[in-house]
Image (cartoon, rainbow, N blue to C red; front, side, top):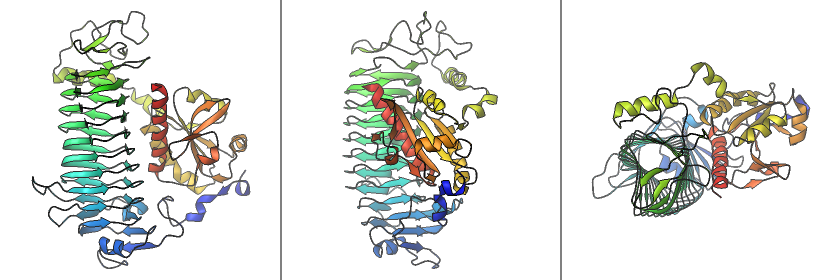
Length: 499
């Protein structure tokens, strides 16, 4: 298996560590504010670029407002180098977006963007997308913009691992459909994540904290909110004329009001954790449990006599509107606090409760988040009972496989309790390489289930297939590429459970 039997594909691209960001036939244009590149202005580089080109921007402070009307990859120096240097873009034109994207298939990665409030009569955006598809915004930091990231009439874009804060709107979607927002940190805004007249978007693994409104669903339908942490907002999730949205596996902690539905109907809320001053207000007609599970409510006062994890009595949100969780979850990890106690909704009590709920044995933390070294398919099959399984197939002699180790360790910690992260040493387990038909390493993929005795794999486009060749990721990629695949797998799991 060593050497010739498995080709180390990673040696082909020794210059680029992030193999997904540069095409082999694309022109690379360097921008350096000190004049050491092809251009000293980002806009000048864009004006002279062609579709498919990559623009690499060196560290520095670029004071300009930028418009993108071509299919480009625009990357900061830190994206490729991995260092901590920053590339800043500061808007200088009043009442203008700092970075406007008007073309599909644009990638933007690794910038710090600030425009400053422009007044009350016009909202400027740090990054503005209009009428575009398949754009990717990742690892950007946006502060002191009226709108951090704004999508208008846009479809199928990926907003991943950005930090957005100190603005009016953090991430805003208007008339937009089918976008994915994942692993973003949105803090200290008036509205953290806002959806207006937007449908079929996915919000997953985001953190919305210390905003006036964590997530605002306004006249928006059929969106999915899953595995988000929404904490310390005045309103955790606010639905205004929102319909047929799904809220599942979110943690709503220490908000003044966890979820508030106003003139909203047909929304489904289940398997969420509510630890708030007021957990929920429902002035509409919404469903607060699935056919098999409800939500965890910190102030649930009922019993669980048969210890099946479901409370014996329902949890009433609004008796008048029939807003009731008929299957409230009861958690047994509350030492010293039980259902017979009168829990007072003051801040000290809730914080103590939250700490007890999430306290863990530190000695077991490393073991729980460790990458599983798989040696047989039985381990994969057992883990599939709990959720998706990510496999990385490689070998110790493969330098790119070794470089990938920190990435999969971070994935194991990030997706603990949601997905299993596994690694296979093909030198020690050649039969697994034969089974999966491995030709190049590292070879990574996600299994989401078993159907008719065959594994079902998640593809990068969000579809599932029994053909592994359509779903594997070969070579060393960025962590965001694997996060996207895992998030799509978790979304698939949510959709399957809701059927």
